[in-house]
Every structure is written in C-alpha cells, then in structure tokens.
Amino acid sequence: MLRWLTERRRRHLLEAPLSPAWRELIEQRTPSFEILDAGERTRLAELVQVFVAEKRWEACGGLELTDEIRVTIAAMACVMLLGRDHDLFRDVASILVYPTAVKLPSAGVFVRNTPRRAVHAGTTSGVRLPDGPIVLAWDAVLDDATTLTDGANIVVHVLAHAIDTLDGIEDGTPPLPRAARAAWTSAMQSAFDAQREHASGFLREQAADSPAEYFAVAAESFFERPRQLASALPDVYDVLRAFFALDLAPRAGLEGAPYRS
Image 1 (cartoon, rainbow, N blue to C red):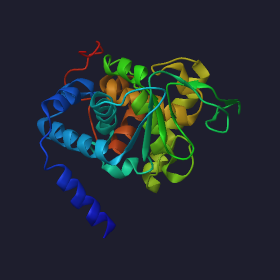
Image 2 (cartoon, rainbow, N blue to C red):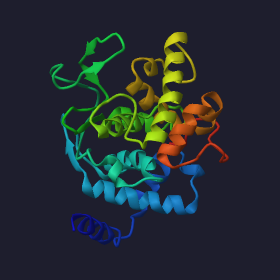
Image 3 (cartoon, helix red, strand yellow):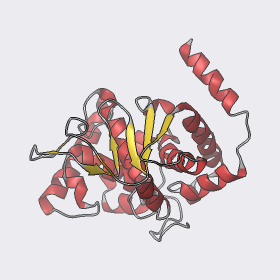
C-alpha cells in the first residue's frame, strides 16, 4: 500500500510541466547530459522533479535556498538514477546546504577510517553524516557544475557513500547479488591495491584512502569521464556500468574539455 501511495504521489507531481528555467539548469548542470538520448533526458527531468519534492532541504550558514541550488544538486544526483530508481537514495532524507566549506564540530559527527585507521574530522565541502543527512557546500557544487567533465563531482561522491552504506557498512561495496558482488570485489580490490601501490593513476589520490573512497572517486569519473575511465580502468568501468545499469562510454562526446557554464 505504501509503495502504491508513493507512486501515486509521484505521478501527481509529474503532472505539473517542467519550467523552462529548471529545464535549462538540468541541461547545463547534469554530468554527461550531452550524450544522453531523448528518452533518458525526459526520465532525468522526471527524476529531478521527484527528488526536489521528496527530499527535505535545509539552508545553513546564512545561505538562501533557491531553485538553482535544489535543481543543480538534484540534476547531479539523478543522473545516478537513470538506470535505477529512487530507492537507491532511500536513506537520504535531508540535504543540508552551506554557502562554503563547513567545519564540523567533532569527530563524533563525521569520521573517515583510512587504511592506516586514522580518524579525521574537520572542514568539508561534502559529506554523508552517520544518521543519514548529507552536507554540501554550494560553492563547491557550483564549481563542479561548471566543469562537468573533469572527473570531480562532490554530489556524486557523497551520494556514492550513501549508496555504499545501504547494506549497513561503508566498505566500498554497495548491496549486490552474490555473483555481482564477487565481480565487484575482484575488480575494485585489484584497482584499489594498484592505486595504493603506485600512489597515482587515472583516479585522483583520494581514491587510495580506503575502498569506500575508491568507489566514490570512481563513480565521479564514471559519470563525468566515462570513455576515459573505460579505457584506463576497464574492469572498474564494467562493474559500475552493471551496477548503475548505464553504459555511457561507447557514446560520442565528452572529450574532457570543460562543460559549458
């Protein structure tokens, strides 16, 4: 019954036409938008409408929450749902947006366990809090929104962490059937080990912090530089393609130049 009511509410939401301003923001702020087909672009717009309506938004640090902020974040997020559905973000109920990087008050609010088992807390531009909400800095989001093919996207990164923890543990492996989990573990662990061993590679250095960080950083490149990721790390691309049910690498475009602002 609850599922039926949710779908009914969503159908009602989608009866309202998308405003030209929202459509323009989606076109300009979505990773890989230029290589999506017409059906995917229509679905993306619908996903954004539902995402904006269903999440609880909170402006923090004196920020004024606007449609530009909500739609930009939603567009970056919802490209991750094109081959899936809203259930992938079921544990993300609230989105807290600050004007710039925020200093978190204590290690009890956010900790990251690195392979050296060190604990870090402090200033961040994007993080998933332990109880579910995500925190984003608008200036970092906007910067990523104007260079959507550089492999850096704080919204995708943070939401990858949220997906990772759907099974109750942040270990770099989202919930998967047994066979898919075996393929994922083989591909990701080998790539993570290589990243740590060589201390550099196609993905930026943060990917070597932990398997969870490797997944999040790889997800950024999957949506922003799919062809380059498939060429540099084909096994990683393949498991991400299977998980997100989206194959962007064979499509034309996205040569790595900054996206239009």
